[in-house]
Length: 135
Image 1 (cartoon, rainbow, N blue to C red):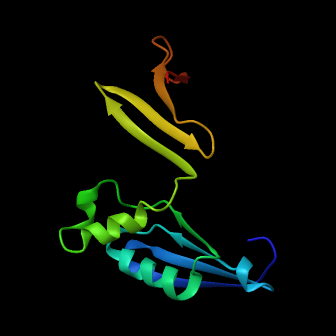
Image 2: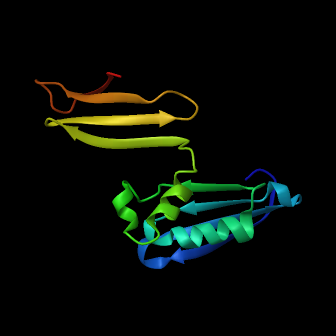
């Protein structure tokens, strides 16, 4: 964070590698918190950090969240947890997919559009790979 006077690191879940980086600035409104590798199991902790430490006027950033679908949140309390994480707008997204045996990538860098790329491999030289945008 630009202008951070103090940076601290906290481990949220050692087994999953989830951590928080808190940056404090001279002006408390410019403080921020970044959560690395948050998982569905840590959402209640994230909600507590958001409510008790970050608040509505500071930045809370989630980096490389580990959930992919609603079922990752289990059955109990799922609605509240899903509502919380869906409140974040993806600023960068890259996902690899297999579609009918072909490798594809979905990419977005906010505020730009969503883009889809297809992996093409040279038939004569397998070391030559091209990612062609198809959408």
